[in-house]
Each structure stands twice: as C-alpha cells, then as structure tokens.
Length: 256
Image 1: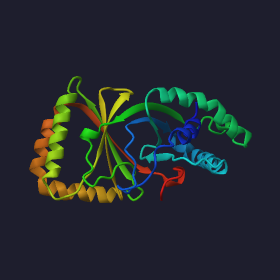
Image 2: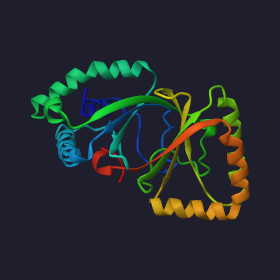
Image 3: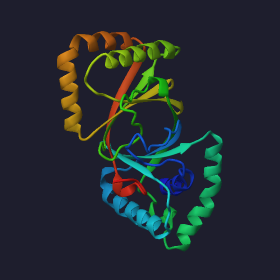
Image 4: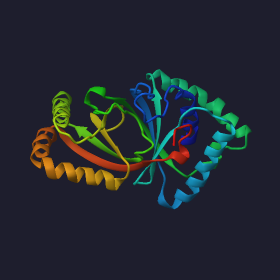
C-alpha cells in the first residue's frame, strides 16, 4: 500500500502533536512513533516529487487541519512520522485507509494509480527514551529553525542495553559539566530489523553548523570524548549514519 495513503492517516491520527519550537507552548513529547521510510530510485525522483506535490495540494483542498512531518534523506528516501499511543493505533490507522483513500479518489486523486511504480517502503516502530535524551534548554521535537537532521542507527550487542544506557548517562553528566550547549534524542526500535537498535538524532540549522559545533567540542574535549566512546563502543555491533532535512513544503499545519 502506497505511503501517501499512510500520510493521509497521519493527518487524522496526529491531532495531539502540535509543532512548536517554544518550550513554553510545546506539548509533552510523544513517546511512540510509527515510521515509514519510502525509497525512490534517482530516475523517479522528479515524477515522485510532482506526484507528491499533487497529494499535498489535495490535502490542502480537503482542508486537513492536523500536522504532518516529512523528511528527505541524502539517500533518496523519505521519512513520514506518525505518533501513536500504542500498537492498537496502527490497527485503527489501517481501518481508516479505505475511507480516506476513497475520499481523495472522489476528489480527483487516485493515490494507488498516481504512485504506481514510483517507490517502495518499509516501516518500524520506535519509542522515545526520555531518560537517555538530552535537552538542557527544555525544547523537544522538530524545530523549524533546525531543519538539518542526522540520525545514527546503532545496532547494539544483544543483552548490552543496560550497560550502553549507563554510558549515555555518563555523556549526559559530562555535558552538564561544560558550558557548551548540546541536545539530542535517543529512540529504541521496538519493531524493525537488526534488533536491538537505538536511533540517535541530532538537529542543527545546517550541516555546516553541526560540523562546526562538532569541531569546537572535539578540539576542546578530545580526551573526554575518546574515553566515553571507548566505553560505549564495546556495546555496539555496528552503526550507520543517515543525513536528512525536514521538509516544510510537505509538512502540513506546522509553524514555519
């Protein structure tokens, strides 16, 4: 089933997720997310983009009022993020698919026909690990002024979750002891492949800004970071870094 169908459901089921980079106005961080990654072959990117824009225009025409959060990666894939209360939320999502796609079709957009042969997808469920995430300024969630994202997919050694968490706590203690500001989120992959897996997410104004911050901290605290990494790396089987960007043009009802 095409991802556009799922994104229509995102609009319906994400009512409680309000986009705001202000700590005072921001609601509690949702904890569980249904993630769909959509893969597009390079020759199909233009056709996919044009078709996706038609879908977004249709959402606007039908006056959907709830947030949609969309990301593009450097590997020609797209992330669509749906916060859910529990696994039962996925069943409810599928139950709505037929009704919503029929409404779009009646309005002139046949998602199955429009997206045929343009993409493939996979999904996973992740859970936000509040105790391992770090936001000293109180802000959580996607901020409009920090569109660049970097995700590190960390495949842990089986049975090493507690030990790895202890080292992350040491990272938090270290950052609490220095003047420089930093923040991140850690997610546990509940349903997916290559488990156990954590996802570490950083955001910044740009990739250059992120690299400059890394260099500043690395030059100043090289020995500390080497010690912490040596403690953490023994609990890892492998890791993969993915770069990407928040897409306001395909993210609906969010503050720009």
